[in-house]
Image 1 (spheres, rainbow, N blue to C red):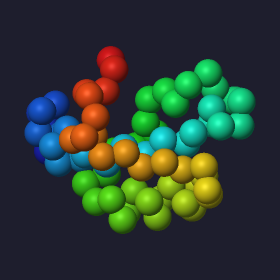
Image 2 (image 1 turned 90 degrees about the vertical axis):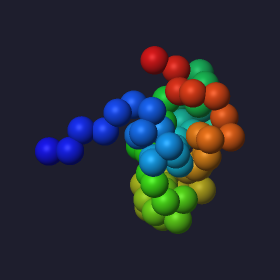
Image 3 (image 1 turned 60 degrees about the vertical axis):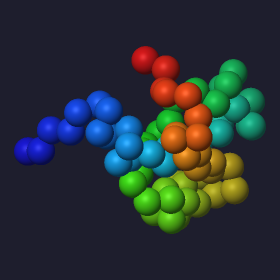
Image 4 (image 1 turned 180 degrees about the vertical axis):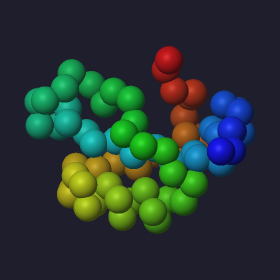
Length: 68
């Protein structure tokens, strides 16, 4: 098993997938990401398959760090 440090994981897996359940009134806010991806295209494809038009992919290098 390969262990990745938190800082390395954030730079390698920088695309976060959000379900955006808040858009349907199922959550108060965007919350934590469902998954992290190294490739935007993979994140978008996975998001479309699971959540359709509600899926949102965010580049974490452009945002603040994830909340604990």
